[in-house]
Image 1 (cartoon, rainbow, N blue to C red):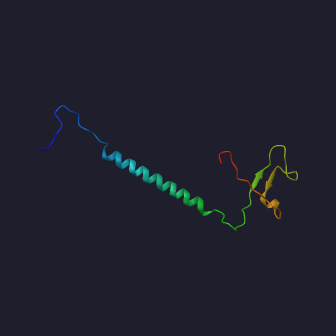
Image 2: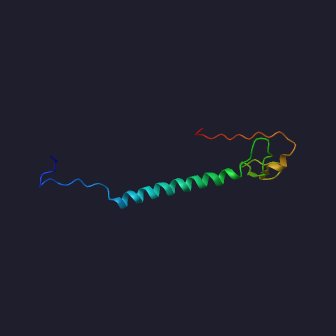
Image 3: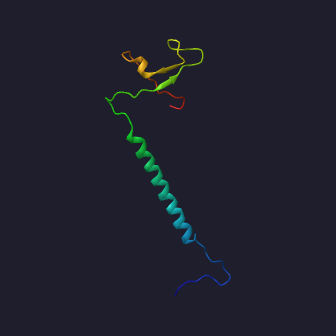
Length: 90
């Protein structure tokens, strides 16, 4: 004995198969893009013991370093350098 809904009752409708497939393809594509982006950013990272790459910083307004408005890491060669990676959200 099987139970079937009465004739006037609305049928339950699920999500169409094409919509489910579309969602899964989107999720997989998102994971692939994120994984590829993480892989690319990790290729050029500096490891412990490596020399720091040279970079340029702009001086704060009103301050300068030996008359220059920009400072390169290579300008500080032979001097102790402390880099503080602090942010308000840390």
